[in-house]
Image (cartoon, rainbow, N blue to C red; front, side):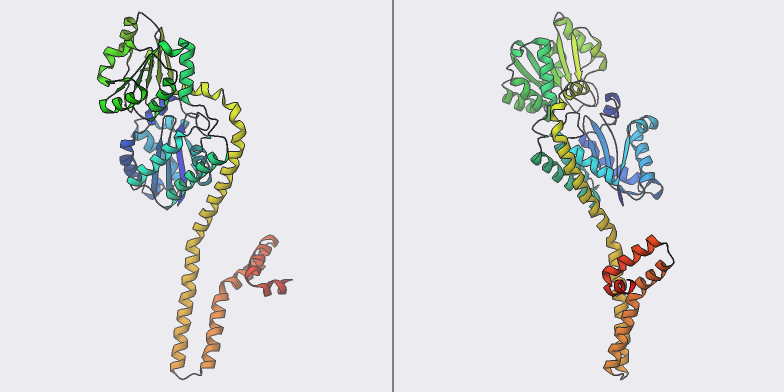
Amino acid sequence: MQLLALGLNHQTAPLALRERVAFMPQEIGAVISRLRERLAAPDRGRLSEAAIVSTCNRTELYCAVDEPRLASEALTIFLAYEKALNVEDVRRAAYVLPQGEAVRHAFRVASGLDSMVLGEPQILGQMKQAERLARAAGGMGLLLNQLFQRTFAVAKEVRSCTDIGTQSVSMAAAAVRVAERIFGQLSQCHVLFVGAGEMIELTATHFAARHPQSIAVANRTLERAETLAARLHGQAMRLAELPQQLHRFDIVVSSTASTLPIIGLGMVERAIRARRHRPMFIVDLAVPRDVEPEVARLDDVYVYTIDDLGRIVQAGTQTRQAAVAQAEAIIESRVRDFEAWLRLRAAVPVILGLRERAEALRDAELERARRLLGRGTPPQVVLEQLAHALTNKFLHAPLAAAHQAADADEAERTRVLQWLSRFYPRAERAHS
């Protein structure tokens, strides 16, 4: 089995495509089951393990397969089929990473080196969630278990030994900076957060630090909205109230798990009219998007997606590049460790086969020796014959290799004889 990764991220695919290939946590288990079923056949790569990492910036499939070339094509078709996309659109935006490249990529992703925001810590938690979901779906086996556990260890090492994490600049901070460019001080602004997940909590903390005039949280589940609102000293409201209440807010930050936009063009048009065209700043952190793209065309409305904020954040990455080289060196060292483990694992069947063969030869010669003793053959003669037979049979394979090397070219002959000399020093002296 070999590792294989296929994915699309913020570097290879626009937001419009990323939001269409995103998987919600509640659907990943079923998707992994279908993936293992449809790619189980030899002509599709014979996939046996699978995990899916799906965030606002990437959708990646990590797999263990028998035939990477066949599996990569089958994975592309599977992803396009699952999301009702044109296969060519997926193929153009996707990257396929075999074995060592897949390992290196996973390490870099978890360490925050492949993120839109260099060093951001959220991706590690998202990869841990992906591992838990894959395990629950039966997608984890020996290879992926090793990959993810080593990935988590590498990410921890990178964050402990470098400044990559401490120097990160978040999307939330970027959103606050844009808001201040539009409104100046936020002390007179009314802020609404739509959703109550981790991304909203992080962003709300940044905005709350600017002491806006009021904060509100809207969510489908009122209880979760009330819990977050209480921490922010704000008010809670049901998501269903949004169309009637939207005009009250200067800043709206939305990040929900909805598969369809929840803030539509008509809703915002009515809100702007009710505000007498006072500007409104809308931050859409969701993938798929919570805000209809057409909203950005309205006058007096400033819509920023995660891609827009990402471009702002990237402008400040130069100050964090010093930590990158150190992080990359750690990752390269751990990639070599993983590849060494893979080589050792590949040798295990050969080692077991050699041991089984040797034990079979031993058992056969012991049985022959017992028969000779039973017939009255002197023990000394039996022992000598046993030793002679075992020596000949155990040496058969290395002697055959030495004879074959005699007919090979000089480089191959030297390699084989040097290898034999490690285990048979006398052979080295005779050759010299």
